Length: 158
Image (tube, rainbow, N blue to C red; front, side):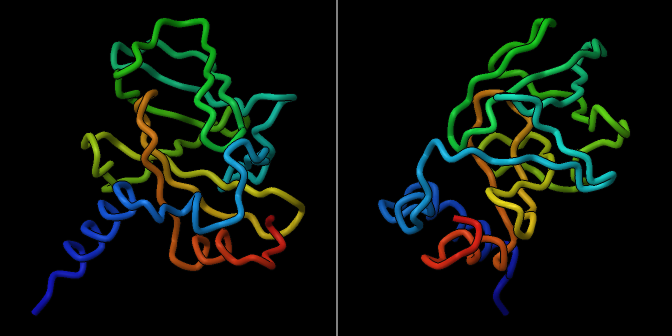
């Protein structure tokens, strides 16, 4: 009997290394603007050219992080000191304070926690994006359904 989790992890690893990555298979520009939404209260996380998150460092310091909402652009700003390779203790909605950390989800690249929030490009369906909480990690994942919605040429999202 095959281990489904093992098969899924191997497919994800292949996707990272693949010449035929999601970005290349889809018609998504690397700098596509993503509207970001809290999956709990539904409020927008975007303020101007940044998506805003409430973060907690491993040392317990709480602050606001403003990150680029453009796909694959890793610009981030925060008034508190967060090292590039530091795993955040928590990431929350700045409106409802609900944690975005997904219990039991671990990044396959560096074993850090993962967080989930919703994104959209237009006013159509919001897609659930799961990303690593480490500042410099680019690993993300989506459900098969949302992933397919991204790569469809005629998608309402793109």
